[in-house]
Image (cartoon, rainbow, N blue to C red; front, side, top):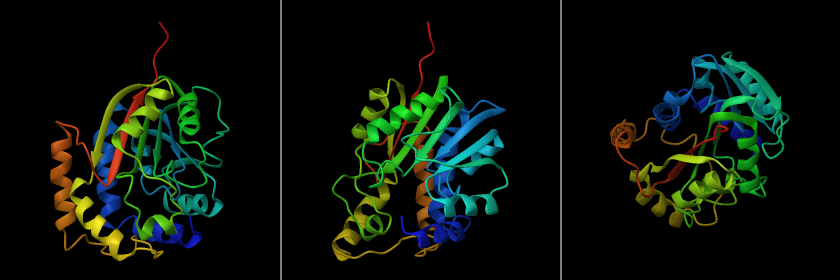
Length: 244
């Protein structure tokens, strides 16, 4: 990712509609599975924009390969207990160190050559009975200007992400898409922005005068009952089996 993108993330995370709704989505899907007083990993968590909320339940360790991201997280998120410079594909933690690991828009990155190996590493770092939660860009063929500025090499289907979870030896407990209402406009943008490199973070902060946050809230209510087949994001949660 371009370094100035981290600065944009740190600036936008409290005001941009997408960060707020994504935190709410993750709190809905992963939050109830976090044990009070547990230890949680925000893997590739950047500035802490989407994972620092886990600090409400326990101790959060943020791991990222970029020093600037960790510095910004330390500045803006006192609830993060530790920030470690680390490659998510080779985590410097003992097996079973965490009750849960969250990994948001990391496997898509060109610096992750083998997403399956990275998910296995996340599974290794989680204790038996703990959870790994993945959230990645959805719709394989939808490559936009924002993907280029963030150096995203791939997008995932819901099935892709579920296969990564089960391939790492985890029990799949949730698999869904999200932001389904954004697929049509994103497809149009992809055509308009063909060949361009540009960030979405500093655009449309309020989400069309609150329309997009309201749609996201309605979708979250739906996701409390059912899984969605396709969306601009896909999520999967896996549980590490306990020994018999």
